[in-house]
Length: 508
Image 1 (cartoon, helix red, strand yellow):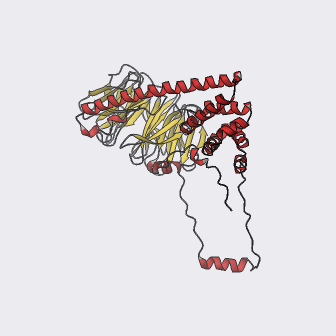
Image 2 (cartoon, helix red, strand yellow):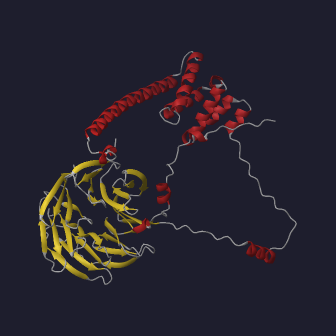
Image 3 (spheres, one colour):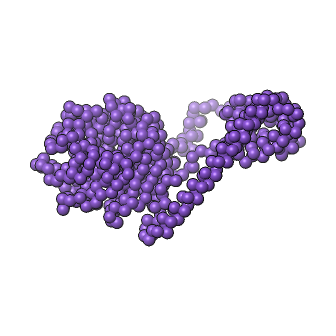
């Protein structure tokens, strides 16, 4: 006796994200723990030493959290107005922060005492940085200047005033400790050399610069502003190597992770994008409930912290793989023999049979019209359109589509045309629906002398949808052709093969 084969609707279901090693790796982060603060989270920075506590700059204080307990272990509150950009020194013992008071303050992490007070800026200081291998600090201020301070004497060593607007981004190079980069709302990124006390390079990002990052090699640096991340080559004199446009709102922060093999970018579009640093392609995306102002990642990616515009700190800790130890055979035997009495009863587990779907039931009985009505129900159309498509394809194979339509009523025809309007542009279904609609409309027009006005209006709507889709396809084909021409000319004009993999990364 042959069995009835059910419809295969799985082939039309929406495919999930591609399961890659990066997807699995970042999915191991536990669900976020949300901590509410009293203002936007301006900056997050992790200590480079165990236990990798993180400093959160928010409102009039800097708080140091334990990443395991998510509790505040240190509270630096020597601020009368908002604090900005608190950052750890490379040994994790000191924290430097700017603020609305136009000063820069240096704190001892263990004692919470303020060690130094740098006074000289005329406007708020939003970013600070420790100069590597030197007892110096760089600060970036809204007074349009960049200053380098001597920690021992609190004196200003260098002052750079090349910007025409607020300086909201700044970074120093770990590989070349004399190089300071600053980004401003005048759209420019400037490079200074403290050895010559001069500006050595200037590039135009094209948007107000929110964040800067020097790649480990030292030859490339990134600037973030607007919806773009731009890659610049310092060795080539500030040549633009490539541009990444994966966000649709302002990018606010950049961080490196995974031993400098991954790049993270946070944006006001509520996403944190993770890129492979070798190709600058997105390998994973993290979603948050509000715009992201700051992001931080601990060493070995154990903890990821995002600071949001509504004062929420999102802390995600990597879940450890716990291996469940199986008891030995001897231990199992001893447990069974001592705890569970012998019995001759055999327990048969309950077998749950899958309930047959209505459309499968009607198909099995060759009730094609009833099967069609079953998959044209609003719940099925809205939640599981793949079932409707699968049945329509099956009816075409059985040469029973016209019979099912004519056996139904006018409401069946209306629902069918509405389904065509809604799903004919879906890439999963378009090829099949076009074939089904062609045959269905021929059947309707040949067997009905006059169409009711409401069905005629639906057919006009379907014609308009198809016409719009045709125009969109034509425009996309034109754009694709233009982009291919531009990329081909750009590749042909580039004589340096070292950048061939980076230049085409401009988002299309």
